Amino acid sequence: MTVKHTPLTDAFLADHRHLTRGFSALIEALERDDLAEAKRIADELDRLAGPHIEFEELVYYPAVERSLGRDNVDKLYHEHQVGLGAIRSLLERDDTPLIDAERGRLLADANVALEHAVSCGALLGYVTALAEEEQAEMLRHLEAARERGRRWTELSRTR
Image (cartoon, rainbow, N blue to C red; front, side, top):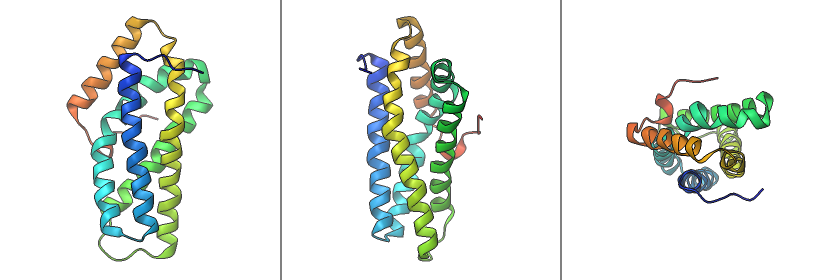
């Protein structure tokens, strides 16, 4: 499906580029066993992802659900929870070195979040089929979420 470039798609895809880069950097830090860097990146992802996650869960996913169905969208919400779990674990962690099992779990969860960020952008084609007015309203919601600037860890779970 080809994505038509609109102000909404451009903003959405820019967010996903930041998330993709962030989770890639987080994975690299975890693979190097650099806990301090992983925690720094987790803090940055918490801040950067919050507005976008808020938009996705409250506005974007309900619109996509009409095309994809509840089960597929529930999977997207679940992937958010997996990524959030990795972020929370790192932010709440002291500076004690990671044991292999912890690092393995964090890597697995960060990889789920990375794959989500990469594949979720492809779903934008469903939204671009909406009327321009509805897309403009969605963009206003995304911009308002950015303005509020809530961290991912501050959001209430919506599903």
